[in-house]
Image (tube, rainbow, N blue to C red; front, side):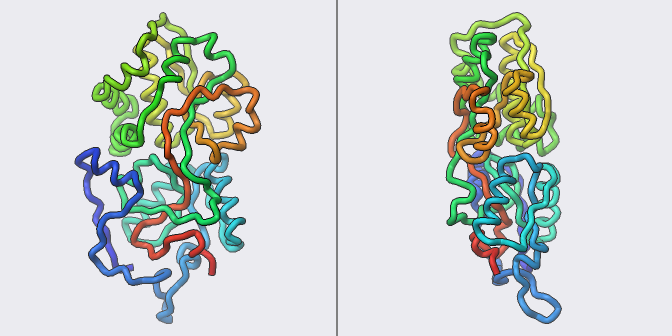
Length: 308
């Protein structure tokens, strides 16, 4: 393709908000290619052929992967498959394709730093395979409120925005240590943290165990909340696992809490499986989203367009 987008540096949270909305910047150059690059005969190549009928996904236990399998079925995309890997592998593949302005389709979710770094867009989903706007829930083990009431109250009060999370994510992806990035956000948002901890007494070394998946959003939230609770006197332990084991650990009590409950659709399978063994403590963020994501230089707007 002929269009070459220069990625601009991020200089303000206002720019972050624009990026996180998954909207592309103004396009002044010609992007007349319709479905893909032209092959040796001069014919336009389909999007499917251009990407070898592959969608670049993340870890196989993630709810977005289940939703993507559902989308392939809903839209009768029999030729297509989803490549499993990790969040890091997905963003590396995206960067490689984006830098060369090559076609790529990835599983995407927001909040995520990639929308601040690159001009991307969600493909429309008229069949609703990915659901609508979702929420991120804080999920605890049964008995957490009785055992660690102070931490439970903070977790129940915990609520922030995409822009808040983005500040930490972008610092991390730019090379900052996650704990340092999280502390920077806490230092700049003492009023919000004060609301979560209002009236909560300090403790003396009680242990609380977080479990998380290495998704950029969850790394940001878990590191931030760990520091908040450490400041209250807790000894915080953090364990990185895959999505399935994350829910299993909280359900069987080997971990206390997870901050990555995407509901009502993305993690519905896990919540249904462990519904009597989990405590849905509260919503930390509204209006989050999952779906298929492409660079804005690709002339495609809907999942329907993947059919030939």
